[in-house]
Length: 255
Image (tube, rainbow, N blue to C red; front, side, top):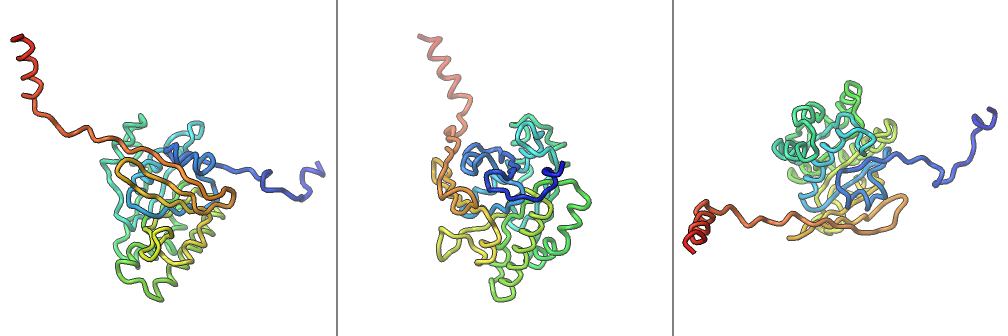
């Protein structure tokens, strides 16, 4: 009994790490089994990464024994990335009821930088007080600031938000995902200033080509820089008219 309550020293390999699947095997492998609770994960690069966020939001409705959380997901969307039809398609693909999935994904849309700041700094606590959510997604955190012209005050607000999200994630032991475009000065780094990057413990760069999406783990407290990729679904070649198939049948019958 005395040994069980005595404070002691724990090495990194003794720390219990709680992880969830993101619903994408390439990402799960890259992150050593999935996203980790208490860490803020920053995804930056091509806009295709938002489709991964949509898939993850749906996948988290899976029960824990299948890699999800079975809990609601809260999304603060400054990137205008929500596509209801895509959420529906993914739900059917995962054999989930789309209506039930929609009821458990809570979305707050920001239309200007002031709304982004207010939602994160003033409303975030209330969202999680009312809902037993385990996943927080903040899509396009710097997007509206960049569109409006990122200046001194905007950079300061970005710093406040990034620090608040990191602290909030640690305190509530959440699975947090932030998205940002790549920097225009250096495509290998995220836009939004140094504060955003420094307050996210995990960085994943996302690049899309014609045939695949490549993920590069550029920062992680446990793993080195490494890469993974997944193939894109091939185009079926368009829709052919019914006459195309009927003509073949007619030729067969004539022969």
